[in-house]
Structure formats: C-alpha cells, structure tokens
Image (cartoon, rainbow, N blue to C red; front, side, top):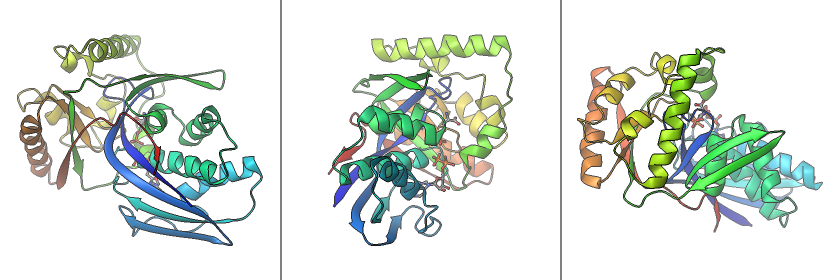
Length: 297
Ligand SMILES: Nc1ncnc2c1ncn2[C@@H]1O[C@H](COP(=O)(O)OP(=O)(O)O)[C@@H](O)[C@H]1O
Ligand SMILES: N[C@@H](CCOP(=O)(O)O)C(=O)O
C-alpha cells in the first residue's frame, strides 16, 4: 500500500497565465493498493459528487501509468480530500499528480519523475498547477518540443496567502472558453512586463511593486463576468490590507498575498463581504506556501 499527500495550487498569480503555479498548505491524501477489482472510496470534498467508477480522474491518471508499466490488475483507491472542487485551487491537478505518482510508487517506480511530469501536463492541458503540485514552491514552466522546462522559486518566508472561496463551482473548461483566442499586442506586452516584474520581485523579496506585477490583461478581464465581486476585490486589495490580489487559477476563488496572519484575516473578511454583497456565500483560508510538492507518507 502507498500513501501520498498532494498540495492545492494557485495558478497564474495574475499575469502568469498557464505558466506560473504556487503550491499551498492545503492537502489531499490518496491511498492506493493492489486489488482484484476497482474500488474507490472518497471522503471530504467531493464525497457526494466524485465518480467511483472508471471515469474517476484519480483512477484515469493511475491507469495511464499502469498501461505504461504493463500492469493489468485491479486497484483500490482511498482519497481524503481537503481541496474544494472546481474553485480554482487545482483539485484536478492534485487528482492527476496524486493518481500518477501513487500508481508509479505502487509498481516500484518504473517511470522517472520527468516522464510523470510530461504525462501529467498532457492530461491537465497546461503545466502551471501540475508542476507546482509535483515539486512545490512557486514554479515557472514552459513547454517546448514536447518537454517541460521549469524553475522552482522558494518563497520569501514572510509571505502568506489568503484565499476566499465562493460557494459555487466553476469548471476550468468553462472559464477557459470565455477567453478570446486572439489577444492584442498591447495586452500581451502588458502581461509580459508584469510576469517579468513578478518573478524579479519574488526573487529579490521586494514586494513594493506586487500590485502592478500581478495585474493581468489576458484572462481576468474576461473571467470577471463569471465571478461577480472579483474586480471590486482586486481594485481594493491594498486598502483591505493585501500586497496584491488576483483570481486563483481559473476561479472563482480570489487570492492575495499578505505579510501577517492579522492582515490576512482583515483582508479575508473584506473579500467575504464583497462576495456577500453580490449574493454569493464564501469562506476563506489563510495558507502558507508549500515548499515540497507531493510527498510519500
Ligand atoms: N479527488 C478527485 N477525484 C476525482 N475527480 C476529481 C478530484 N478532484 C477533482 N476532480 C475532477 O476535477 C474537476 C474539477 O477540475 P477543474 O474544473 O479543473 O477545477 P479545479 O482544478 O480548479 O478544482 C471536478 O469536477 C472533478 O471532475
Ligand atoms: N492556467 C489555468 C489554471 C487553471 O487552474 P485551476 O486550478 O482553476 O484548474 C487557467 O487559468 O485556466
């Protein structure tokens, strides 16, 4: 039997669409063992909705590894989920990375980490949160010639993350459909400059420009139609005590960086209030940045 712990992830951090991801201290757990048949147990988030059949995402990810390694038997999967589904916190990336890594461990690690990384990115469709879930920290990824190139930044100690999670679900697929296929050069230039500024700010631990460095011009302006309250929260982030604020992944959660737990609480209460003023119930979590990525227990 193997057991893994997989972190939630916040993708994009504003301008880093499909390339920046950050692992945070909120975890799902997967136990996997050999069995004659397929059995799936789910507790916690998604326990009412997640499929227990062959179309379960954790099983589908594990099956890719089983097929590569030539294993044809059954499997039992027990998952304990703390990452809410379809809220922009990387539940699908955690399911894919968790399913693949657990299956590979169960079979005695026939595949190398690079192979798993490639298969997981192919399955998720973009590298940002898959890479962060695998290796932890804040990751910057690029795909070229079928290979994934990434760098991991270890976060500045003092940064905390406050994330406000609306009650409604938003499938990433739907939140991607709303983004136009073509973007203006001016918007591309604006995002390129922000991403560079963001990475430089994180590396130099200079947070003074984070509000500008996390501005986005290519996905948030379209997604705000799907997340009412998002724009008001982001516009007022600094007066609410945050260093900066952005949509978490594809949304609908909204996340910000703060320097203290006290500041985080004040900011979270502000965000919850804005959502409530739009008729949306929301709760919040104050999280750290997870440095390790998926771990075997
Ligand atoms: N632990 C899990 N087991 C099985 N399927 C899961 C699990 N977590 C997420 N999923 C699947 O992924 C979907 C959510 O993925 P997505 O829309 O990308 O949102 P996000 O990754 O932001 O939570 C869920 O509706 C469900 O189908
Ligand atoms: N770059 C992707 C990230 C999606 O993250 P998720 O946690 O919402 O699945 C996007 O913005 O679509």
